[in-house]
Length: 69
Image (cartoon, rainbow, N blue to C red; front, side, top):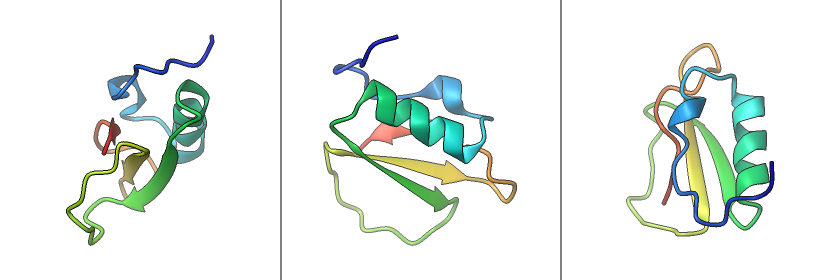
């Protein structure tokens, strides 16, 4: 599968372990930075079109749909 420059969300990654999820996002969109964070982490409320935040539950599983921003 090739990179997907228009992809902006990854609902299929909810329930997936952190490392494969981050790897898939980086493969799909090599132009964005992937930030892996615990759910509920304090964040700056800014939008960044070159960032995807991946929020994990206590078990290291993606807890919500990763999106650009």
